[in-house]
Picture 1 (cartoon, one colour):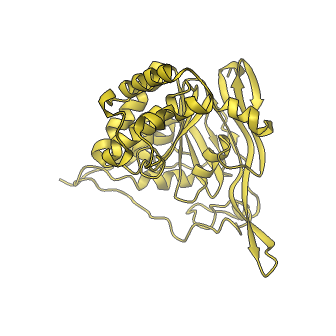
Picture 2 (cartoon, helix red, strand yellow):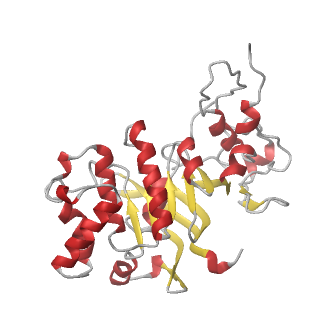
Picture 3 (tube, one colour):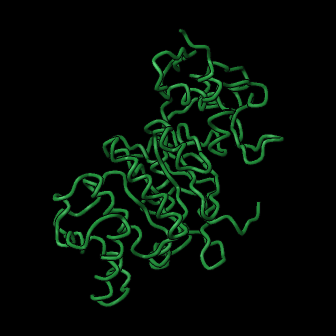
Length: 347
């Protein structure tokens, strides 16, 4: 891997939320929402982030763009050919960096100011960064509206006059206003109807090709992530448990949790017979995680070493770009999508 291809590198990122009790609100513990994740994103690719609700994927995305201040770690972003630690920047310097790194939020209903017209919403980043005259800003807004499939005649309308899919298009236009090179997409289609999801996903793919964008695509729907991602990162209780190419993850998973997620994907064939084994137990409390591997309390392949020693995220031998945090990754033969759909069917 050429280091010049990497646009974002995250090292040991942590976000802890303090638990306070008593009259004096003393800190008695921490909720470890993001607990030491490390990964990289290459220029021009889409990296999907999946996991159960509460695994820390949205918190990680918000910490990367510093919408939320992380507890510790490094977030290095390529600016002008140099890798810069975003977490070490002052507020003024970070404001400049946000011209290149933007975020599309999950809920198009709450992420748009209901008191502002579409024109003002999309032009707001240009206003904040003092880019262009009023006339130039208006032309830029019209151009962006066209790119996301909306018309200039809708500029003076308010968010409540649009459908959910149209509102998300407005949010996408706002994210594109400053010509960013990297965008964090925080579950951009989860609040939309299924019929609209494909339209927005196709739009994001077209914009990526048109503007040479790089995406960190956060989602809980594995079928969505499969179609948009070059590589996929699986998170569990604040940690990365597996990361590899989309094809490799779906056909050759190496972590038991990934296998369980894949088995939960429904197959559109009523005749198929599946060896489906639902996970037992509950997700561990992130304020008091178990020792060793955090997944060992639910893992069907657990052994004593899993209960004692936390596994390190490592690249598997002979498998380029396939990283996994499991003691038994080399010896387990886990079931992927292809092998599962190939199970014999009843006539």
